[in-house]
Amino acid sequence: MSRSLLDKRDSHHELYADSAYSGENIARLLEKKRIRNRIHEKGYSNTPLTEAQLERNRKKSKIRVRVEHVFGYMTNTMRGIHLRTIGKKRANGLIGLMNLTYNLSRYVQLVR
Image (cartoon, rainbow, N blue to C red; front, side, top):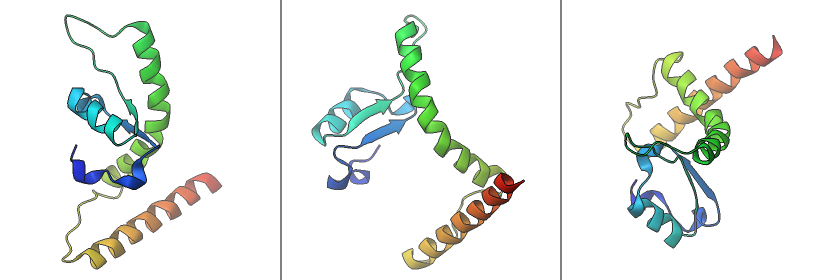
């Protein structure tokens, strides 16, 4: 995780992430920037996760799944989320259209 991805507006919020982002360096960075660490805990072959850690990961997953499903839908159903534009304005426009398309698709699913 890059330091440049986090700024002052992120302080006092929570950061949910996969266990690939766990580690002492990330934990220190989040503490320094006053961001609540909600990164999944990682188990190892010689020290598996305890029941308490598994339960904490389950609670975190209930939040993360909301975002993961959106990206999964965009990746699988909408054939990926790769941007092939030149310039930030065009990229923002394309992202807006992709989000609009997702929201319309989701609306159709909910109305059924």
